[in-house]
Length: 84
Image 1: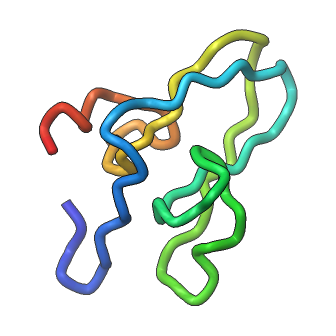
Image 2: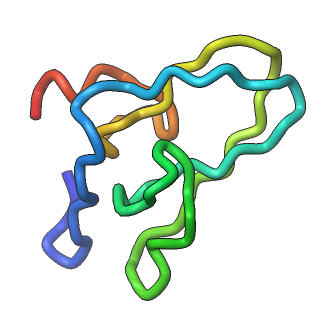
C-alpha cells in the first residue's frame, strides 16, 4: 500500500496486458497509469512522484505486464487486480 505521502497510481485496467517481448529488448513500464500507450510509458508521469520501471526481456515470448499498477512484482502481473 502507498503511504500517505505517495499518491496511488491510476488503474489503467483491472487485468494484465499480454505483450510479446523480444530477448534483450528493454521496455519501460508505465507506473503512474496515465500513459496513453499502456502498459508502457509515454512520459505522462512528468511532474509526478512516479517513474517508469525498466524491464529487459530475458527471452522471446509472451509476458503479462501489470495493468492495475498495484502488482508486488512490478512490472509484471501478480494477480493484485483481483483484490481491487
